[in-house]
Image 1 (cartoon, rainbow, N blue to C red):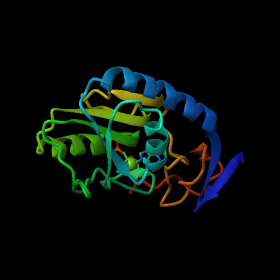
Image 2 (tube, helix red, strand yellow; image 1 turned 180 degrees about the horizontal axis):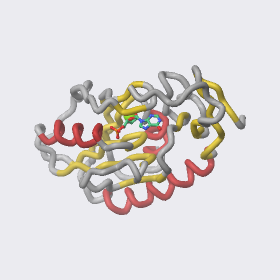
Image 3 (spheres, rainbow, N blue to C red; image 1 turned 90 degrees about the vertical axis):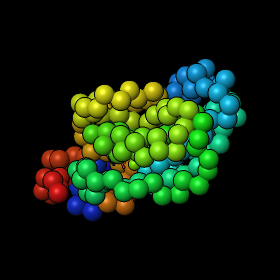
Length: 189
Ligand code: IMP
Ligand code: MG
């Protein structure tokens, strides 16, 4: 499919599945090198967007790990609201452990910063950040991102787990918004 239509917007084909998988392979090699000596790192996959990425990533990881899914919400429509809720579903022991946050995408970084702050209260040994996608032009935080699979310009994307108002998560490829073909400008609220 070259274009998809979700709600009021059109999206163009952008990153094919094979390119996503290659980037994940390279990322997994880096994580295998750097995390294999850590005793059972705890991967915290941030739902909903990172479910597909997490499933593909952990199949490539060769060290003992624990996986847990957590939820935080900061987004509505195509613009970050900057609001972050509490961590939902954190039911394993974090104290003294290496925690790897697994995100679908880091945009402004507000979500990840809040999540790191909240996790610190549980006294982990260290917190590493892993994300499938990063929008470097948007990310203004000083917190370093340890594992980044793909960097993209500032545009709204869907597919491979990412949604536009709950639609578009199931596509194996990633699509980018086509402003010329979408009705109206992206919402700013
Ligand atoms: P941040 O707090 O601005 O870094 O936004 C992070 C969250 O916003 C991500 O975890 C996604 O859920 C969502 N998000 C950011 N950019 C996009 C996008 O291009 N498409 C879909 N969701 C996005
Ligand atoms: Mg997310």
